[in-house]
Structures are given as C-alpha cells and as structure tokens.
Length: 338
Image (cartoon, rainbow, N blue to C red; front, side, top):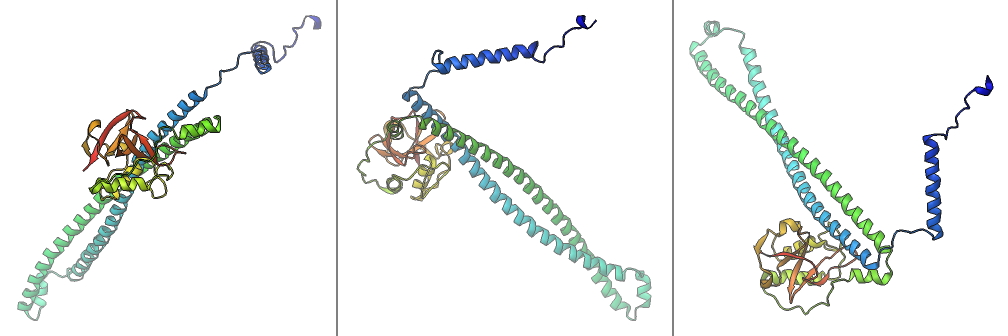
C-alpha cells in the first residue's frame, strides 16, 4: 500500500516552482547584462540631462509660486483669525457686563416683588412717596427690558463672530495643508534636479547654471519709481536664489520683483500669477526699464526689464540673481506697474 501512496509534493512544485524558475531566469539575464553581453539601458547624454534638470527647475518654480500664493493666503487667514479672536474676546467681555447688569435688576426685583403693590400702598406712610417710587420702578422696568435686549444682541453678535472665526480657522487649516503639499513638491523637484546634476561633469554643471546669463550692462539712468526699482535690482545682483524668499539675503523670481518695486513705494502681490495683473499690459516692442516680464505658458517666471532686451531676475537654485536676455525663455507677457 505504501508503494502506491502519492508522493508528498515539495513546496516549490506548481506555481511556486514556476515563480522560482522565473526568478532564476531573471537572475541569469541580469548576470548576462552585468557581464556585458546583454543590452543595458542607454545612458542619457549631457544635453538630455541638462534638459531634464531645466524641466525640474521649471516644475519647482511653478510649485514655488503655488507655495507663495498659499503662504500669502495662510498669512491673511491667520491675521483675520487673530482679529476675530480679539473681537470675540471683547464682545464676550461686553456680554458679561450686560449679564451682570441684568442680574442686578433681577435681584432687585426679586427683593421687592414679593408684596403686591396695593398692599405696599396701604402700608406706606406716604402714599405720594410710594407713587413716586412706583413711577421710578416703571422706568426701571423699561431700562431692564433694554438690558435684556442688549444681552440678547450681545449673545447673537458673539455667536456670529465665533462662527466666522471657525470658518476662518477651517480656511487656515486648508491653506496650511496646501502650503505643506507645495513645499513637498518643490523639495522633491529640487532633489531630483540635484541628483541629475551630480551625474554631469563639473564643467557641464557650470554651463547649465550660467545658461542665458549676460554681462552686466551699463546702468542707464531711469527716472521715477521705475528707476528706483531698477536700481534695487542692480544692487541685488549676485544674491542667491532661495525659493519662497523675498530678501534681503536671497530671492525667488517674484520675490525679487516684489522687493524691487516695494523699494520704490509700490506694493506688488506675491506671485507671478497675480503680478501679471498688477499694472498695464505692455507689448514686447514697447518695453521700458522697470517693466515686469513674464515667461512660459503658465506664467511661472518673472524678471525686471532693464533695457536693451535684458532683464535682471532670480533664475533658479544654484544660479544667483543675474542679467539675462528676455529671449532665453518663452515670453508670456509684460506689465508696467501703476
């Protein structure tokens, strides 16, 4: 009987065995590749690496502008929430005062309200004096009714302020989540760019960082606020690109243009998407020093035009504030701040 018993199947028999065989074949194929007899993935050329690094930088800059917008909204929501909390505290204090006043009237009424007025008139040594007090009581009743209305009004206003504050808190939390999300995106794109850059020879890395840079042109005198903005941009040359920064030690692209025009007494919004709507549109052939020039279809980069087809801008990480030609990137539009 034992000779006819079905042999016990080994754990690797069947699907598992086929899997193991597949792994063995894969290992053999890998060994073949490592031996040089297979076909390895083609190595990217320096130009392809540089093109991909540039794409990562553009994607990081897009995320940076989204981060800047979320940060601006976060700051506004936090400031509004602080104001609402202060207002709620003031209104709560007024509500407590109104309640205390109402409580005093209620206590006084309780102390004198147990005896009917007709009996108090009979017991009064001076009915005329009692009638005078009764008239005062009536006026006090009207005042008490006013205090009741005041308490109700204060309660309603406190509730409204607290409801608004809760909505603003929800908004703040949403913007904080968006802020963190955009920050992660920026950091991931910059990390990917750095890894690719390390695969390039030092000379190629230097070429990439200096791509599009021009010698500093002569600073021609420009009058008015535009002149002040241009002068500020010249003084910022050489300072590092720092994403999310508005100076004074470093800038991102929109942070630089905002700071330059702020020095001239003009308040620009924080992001490229909003700065492009912060003045009068200008045709490319009508550009004047101080104009804001925007690039790429998503309007993700901005520089300050300084004349002769050139701008001062904060290009990307690793490349300081510098002079570039406006023809080095896809032109998207220009604005002259009011």
